[in-house]
Length: 281
Ligand SMILES: [Zn+2]
Image (cartoon, rainbow, N blue to C red; front, side, top):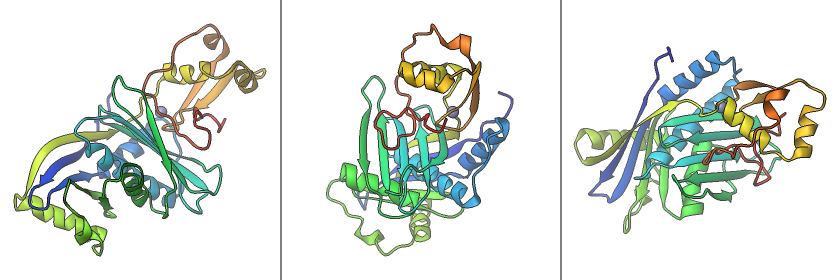
C-alpha cells in the first residue's frame, strides 16, 4: 500500500489511588484514515451530522476495545432513538477499525454487540440505548450487558477517555462532570505520573473485506436468496456491509465455490440475528 497508515494512539492505564482502569485515545487519526479510505475506494460520505455521529461511535468503540487486557473482535450495530439511520463499527485484534452507516430498519432503538475471541465462538448481546449519542450507547453496553460501571467521554476534537471501576471503587465523582472535564482530569493525572501505563495499542481505519470475504458472504446465502439477487444479471455489485466499499462479482466465479465463511467476520446486525448485512442490495 502506498498511502501512509494513519495510526491512532490508545493507552490503557491503572489509576491506583482511585482504583480505576483508565483508557485514553486520540481518534482524529481514525477519522482521517476513514476519509482517506473512502476517497481511495470512491465511497461517498453521509451528511456531516451523521459523519460526526459515526466518528463519535468509532472513538467510543476504540476505547471500549482497548479496555480489555486481551484483544478481541468487536462489532457494534446500533439504531438510536428517533434516528432514521443505523451505525456500525467493528474493531479487530490487529488494530483495524472501520465503520459505516446503513438505513435503520425501524424507529425502535436497539444496539447489538458481537464479540469474538480468537478460537472461541462469537457471543452476542443486545439492549435498548436510551439516548441519541453513540458514545453514551457504548457506555450503556458496559452498564447493561456487563454490569461494569463505566464512563466514556469524547471531546469534539476527538480526545477520549474511558473510566471503569475495579472491585470496590466508584465513579460517583464523574456524574456531574462534563466530558471535557473528564478528559482534562485524565490528561492532568497522566502528566503528574499518577496513572500507571499498562498497555499501548495502535488503531487504524481499515476493513478486512476482500473479494474472498464478499464471495463467502454470498455463497453462504440460501439458494433461493442467491437466485433472487442474481436474477438474469451477469454481474453483481455488492457493498461491503462493514465499510461500504463496492465489489463487482461476475456470475461464473460464484457457482462452484464452497468455502466456509471466515471465522470471526462480524457484519452489521439489524433485526434478524443472522442477517449477513446484505439487505441493502
Ligand atoms: Zn469492507
